[in-house]
Image 1 (spheres, rainbow, N blue to C red):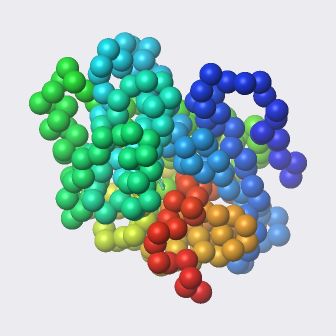
Image 2: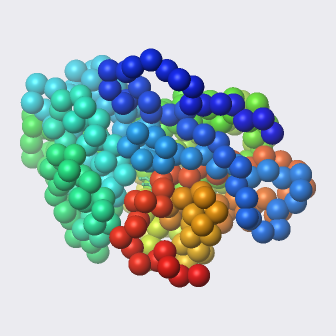
Image 3: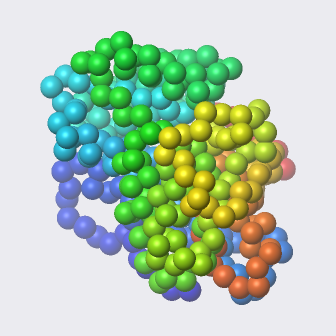
Amino acid sequence: MALTPTFATRPPVADLTARIGGTPLVAVAGLEGVPEDVTVLGKAEWLNPGGSVKDRAAWGIVRAAEAAGMLGHGRRLLDATSGNTGIAYAWIGAARGFGVTLCVPANASAARLRLLEALGAEIRLTDRMEGTDGAIREARRLAAAHPDRYFHADQYANPANWRAHYHGTAEEIWTQTEGRVTHLVAGVGTSGTLVGTARRLRERSPALEAIAVQPDSPYHALEGLKHLESAMVPAIYDPSVHQRTVEVASEEAHAMARRQTRRGLPVGWSGGAALVAAERVARGLTHGVVVAILPDGAERYLDEPLWSES
Ligand SMILES: Cc1ncc(COP(=O)(O)O)c(C=O)c1O
């Protein structure tokens, strides 16, 4: 399949927000049991300026807030995040001149926390046992206590999150596959990626099947993903946009990320999970184009001891 070139030479930009989106769609090799007439493609979201898919949601949320006059005049952006959205808010805030306060579960990777600090964000660590739900509760508490100090971005409830994918990710996938995408595979954290991308792609092609990827247990090691049965369900979550859920074990996702990284596709753990699910979906087809969202890259997890396993 001819893939649309996405990185043309472009003129200078005021700041790197102009380079959010337009990520490559890359052929995924090394999957097992995929029939010849089935193509699996990965959307390489770590090539966004902040290194993850969350640049899209954060920028959508910031743009909407700036337009509504809710940021600036000393007001800080406040949110709960497992890491990637925080990095996105932090660099966008640094580039555009507003402060960022983040409630982050204490089990976020050390490399992410160091990057947040380097970008000048204020970090409030929350109980690791409470996961992202504990961080959400702390952000709500702070926002209620100091309504003048903070703009509560609330990525779990803010429609600008899924809209960024509706107008961006989905349209890019449609153009890059020349309308041939048949299956979308995306992990669920806030659900913004899945909801926005699937909603738009299914308007374009009602037969398209959207597949939600979830960890198979509440005690998983897939940063960014939620086990919805046991977690607070995000307000923007809409169960009607996807047709299937695939549950993935952390070990399977880690092994897939290692395998793909060794093949030159350096995905993080949730990208590994998406590719495990895409492989399962692809095996059950006779023909089709399966697109998996690969939210971030292997580099973000280099301080974890899982890379040397076979
Ligand atoms: C690594 C990673 N994967 C997947 C996701 C899920 O994306 P979404 O919040 O759009 O559901 C996130 C969200 O933070 C993430 O950081």
